[in-house]
Structures are given as structure tokens and as C-alpha cells.
Length: 168
Image 1: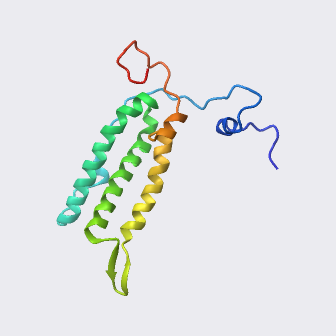
Image 2 (image 1 turned 45 degrees about the vertical axis):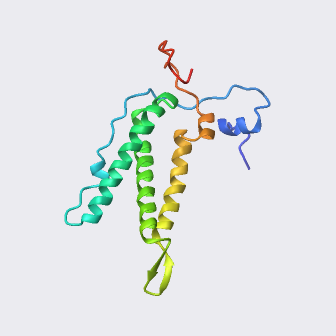
Image 3 (image 1 turned 120 degrees about the horizontal axis):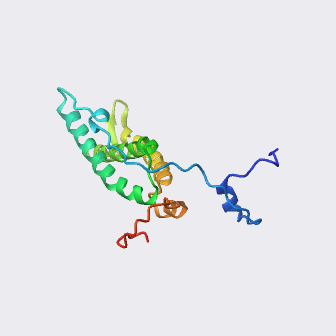
């Protein structure tokens, strides 16, 4: 049985309609800061001797780098990124790169491959599905979909009088 004195999470209060009109307590505020782009060579190293894996990792590095540079400026404006968010954004970029890798594998070898016991599902299809599930979680966490952005509150104190801001 639920403790009657325990506060409901803010999201539950919003979903239930907040009939008492009590103010909803916000979460912890973290001051925004510049995020340093990870060294993608640490995640996708240059492999000696295996040209195929070297090409795959080089492409993954490029995809992750591009995604980082695409989303971080937007997230600074909409979510007020802080240094503690670096790992979440990095993991998001890794998911994007790995999905690209899986999709290329599926395109090159098909969804079904010939195995020892006959035709079987390409393992990349399962891996891609798992990465897509995780990617959906990161998209929700970071506010990268229209519905997720609707739940975000832009960071305060970002108004510097700039009239060119598209979020005004």
C-alpha cells in the first residue's frame, strides 16, 4: 500500500491533472556549461591489420562526431546542458553510429544470412533493434523529439537580449 504522506512525482501530478493546483516542485537545477566533445578514437579505435574493421570504426567516428556537432548546439538552447550530461550525449551519439553500422551490415548482407544450419536472421537486425530501443530512451531524456521537447522547460537566464533567437 502506498504511503499517503509521500509526495507524488511531478510527472504523475501533471498526468493526473493537478486538481488541487498545488505548485509542482521542480527537479534539481544544474548550471549549464560547455561540453567537450569526446575523443571518438577512444570509442572507435583505429584497428591495425583489419582493413574492414578500420573502415567501420572510421565511419562510426565520423557519424558520432557529426551527430555530436548537430545536437549539442540545439541541446544547449533547449535543455541547458551541463558537464554531467556529457556521458548521456556521448552514449546517444554512439547509438546513432552503431545503428548506422548495423544498417550498413544489413544492407550489405541482407536480413537473412546463410548459416551452418540454413538461413537465419542476420544478427545485426537484433542489435539494431536493441540500439533503437536505447536511442528512443536517449531521445526522450534529451528532448530530441517533438513530444519530448514539449515536456522540457528551457533553461532560465539565457535571455541576453538577442532578438535573433528562434526560441523566443
